[in-house]
Amino acid sequence: MKLIQIITLLFLCTSCAIEDDYVPLNIEPIFVDNPETTIKIDIIYVLPSGNNNKSMYHLNENDFVDNLNGGFFHRYDIGLELGQIRTITNDELYDLRDNRDAETSTFLKETQDSYKKDRVNVYIIKRANTIALAGIGNDKRALITDEFLYETTAPHEIGHALGLFHTAEEGNIMSQINPHKRTFFSDTQVLKMKNHIHKTKEQ
Figure 1: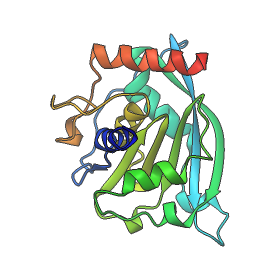
Figure 2: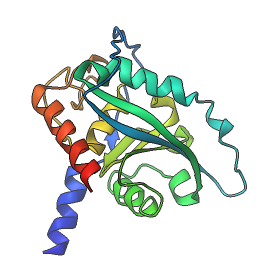
Figure 3: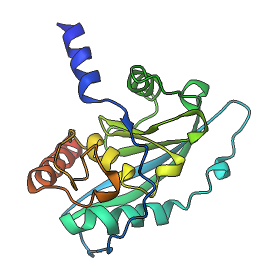
Figure 4: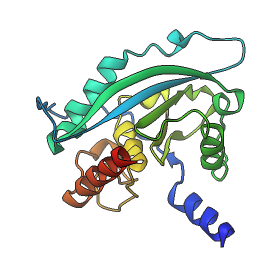
């Protein structure tokens, strides 16, 4: 029974290979003052041994969260609030490579002791070691390669972290096809994310 559960988890939580996500987005930002549903988002930089400087990622964390809110979440009355900015040293995760069957299990294993269950945890790695891996998401955890932080990969993987699965609907943020066309969550997906956030806060 446990083997079936593990296989099911890996099937539902596959890494997202996105080769054509570099088409510029043109989404008019929408911000709301007091979103109905909010959750903290921690930014966790993955570093190799011997390097404890997160500046190698060149990311403005506030701008990143603003981009997520304005482009994707505030319009659905969901707000991401910047929580902690952290680093972890993990050579196996930093050097994660594409092989299309072990990335997800490696990600979940290597982050088991560093993620916080009351928030979304976004792990960032360099893209240098990957060919097509843009991100992974599951169980309040998302991993995003640094070149895809401002693409639709980020809300897509956060959607996975908040309980959403893939859909075939073109234009939907959880679609795997034509990432540059992804602009919306469905009403059902929004409700599922909000319920997931509420349950997270009750834990």
